Image 1 (tube, rainbow, N blue to C red):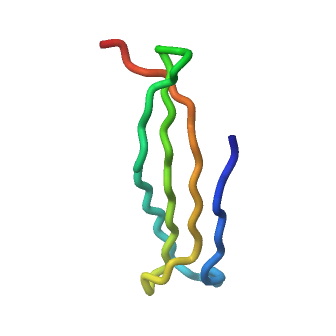
Image 2: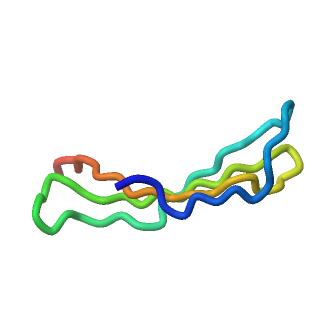
Length: 67
């Protein structure tokens, strides 16, 4: 499925310390394959000044745990 909404907000500079934060806003089961699910991941990258450097999202297809 690839990456969506890739944005470069501030260019990172040599020597910057960066932190990546990830969140999972959407989890849903596959309608056709009960052993699979879709997980939307949203990533934000910040520098040491807490300025947002980059952001993007992606959808992963993952195997579900047996219940």
